[in-house]
Length: 322
Image 1 (cartoon, rainbow, N blue to C red):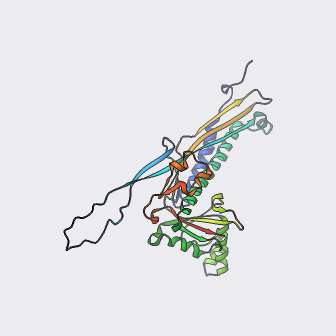
Image 2: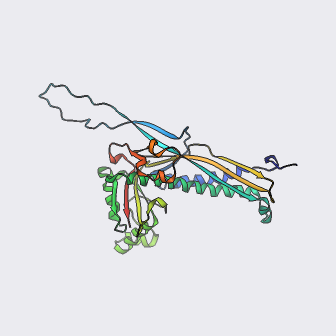
Image 3: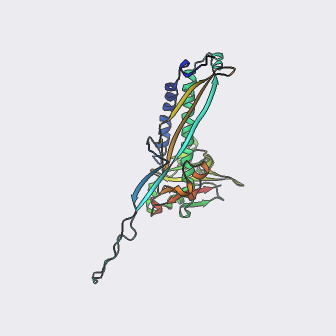
């Protein structure tokens, strides 16, 4: 019996990658530029399951009073290293299969299928990446009581954003972006209109946006920003620069082949990729969180250990509203 093989069919990987690369380049602007680099997407390859980086810990009581009347021995302070660990997350694409007959019936070409699938895959990849980053950030920051502003019984108002910023004290200016669900975002817009503050309300009505203390807002209905309840509550993250770094840590692999032995010839595309997630001021707990974590593990606060000596040196603040 003569069976069809890949050599009988043109693999349109170039078209697939063309669509995927074009869309991912647009999305990287949304990651980096829209959030003022609070959430960054970078192309960094690394081996293994974890991305590890050592750092010198801040020395407590480095500066103290000197007694000019004493010649007693002074106690040495020591340098200590800490470790920041990012975790690699493995993903698959598809597989997606389509009969060649379907292309013929719409007078189309598998090249179009490859390009459009590449575009759709890129969007799905980017949404998955940013959801993972938000999931980790909400879990890590929300696990530090001193960085939580609990307004779960109130709807969002501008004063709550100011209160979140105040958690960083004299470093409040380091908070450069808010990430919030559309619910509190619209609550802010409604407040701006109701307050009837000259210019602020005008801008809200005419342009459809509202002031947010001079910082951009990334509005995304990520599931990690909703806490189910009666009623639901919503998480807003006030983030600093480099709060989260998502790196495409392995080369993408896309395979296309022809499936024979069925009633109709079928074209199948399947892929694999991986990305790593690092959070500012937190390290992935390798022992408890393990390698290649599930979404549930990424969203477990105890899997992200606080390693920054000062809360003001971390990713940001966690605000919750109804």
